[in-house]
Structures are given as structure tokens and as C-alpha cells.
Amino acid sequence: MTNGDLPKFKEDKFYTFQPFRVSKYRVEFQNAGKLADVPGYVWYTPAPLYLWGRYRETNLADAVQQHDIQIFWYRFDKPVFQGFTANGDPAWNHILWAAKEEQWSKLVDAILETVQFDIPNKLLYQYALQRLVLPDPLTHDVQRLLLLAHPKVTVHAFAVLSNTKQIAFDTRKPVSHCPSVVQFKPDPLHTRAGQLLFLNDKLTQDRAFERYKEILMQTQDENYQEKVNEQRGKK
Image (cartoon, rainbow, N blue to C red; front, side, top):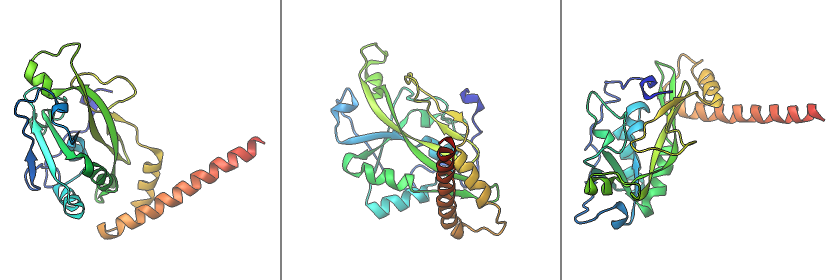
């Protein structure tokens, strides 16, 4: 499936990215020729979270305040990704965020524990961590030409998992230069959980998370019992 099949970026109060609501610090490379020359950071793109995952700066602010995390960033001259265009602005294609190595796990846990609910549209969103190996974008900026011997760097991304689709990088094959996310079918667990969750037409944001956890546990128990019954039937 091509990037053109992705859902369109939505322009409303939930999806408009306001880059400096949470304080972010620009990494200074000075004379560095590759990202490894400035150690101590873990690099990642949060673009799918903001573009398709209903993730907000308020969610990030909660993580920053709760775990005392700092958010760093850098905009490269050459694009690192493609397809991250918001309202005609391709900035997300050029931007990576970074966390200090000792704070990275706290940031990941905070994001993966977040669940967003769009109750009027009966949508829920969770996230998953992905690992990509890409040509070093800083070296690309310095050398201008992408060479075969170009150094590689690990960059992380957060996939969006909803009850209607998944938006993620396809890591089943080698990731190319300037990769883009694609759309996958939803996990049946999320689909079933969404169906049960939104049966209640009086569901509120305050109640949604606890009810969702209850449904996930119930659904997982049912799936486990089905597998047990299948194994018994084969004997």
C-alpha cells in the first residue's frame, strides 16, 4: 500500500502541531560530521503520533513533568523521511527529536501507556515503538551526496495503532533512504475492544480508559480460552 492511501492529515484543534508548547532544545552539532560524534542521545520521530495518532502537546507535557524529561530536536537540511506533510508544510520530513539516553525508557513508557479516545467518531489510538536503521542524516547534510559507504544510525518511530487501521513503517524489509509510513489492517484485538467500548453511548473521557483496560483483559482471556479449547479439540 502506498503513502497515498494514508488518511489525510486533519486540521482541527486536536491535530494542529504547536511546536514549542513544551520546551524543546535544539541540539548543537558544531563541527560534528555524524550523529555518533555527539553521543548520549536517542533519536526518534514523533511525526506519526501528531499527524495520525491524536497525540497532543498536553500528553507530552504530562510525560515531561512527571518524569522530568527533556525534549531535544534538530532540523536537517536534507529530508530524513517522506510523506510527513502537514497542511502543505514538509517540516516533519526534516526533523528528528532526541532524548537523553538515561531518559529514553521513561519517555517510551509514557508514550506507550497513553491511549487516546475520539468518542464521537468511535476511534481509539495506541502506539508501538519501531526501530529503523537509516543513513546518517547529519552526514548527508555535510557531504551532500548519499554514498554507499554512508554511515548508518538507529532512529526510532512510534507507530499508530487504532481500531480501524495501523500506520507504521514496514520493517519487514530493509528500510530505504527517506522512508515513509504505510497503512496496515488493525489488530483484531483493537477492533473488538473498540466495538465493545463504543457500545455505550454515554461513554465519557473520564471513564473510557478504565473501561478499555477492562475490555482488553476480558478479550485477552477469551482469546486464550479459545486457543485452549482448540488444542483440546485436536487431542
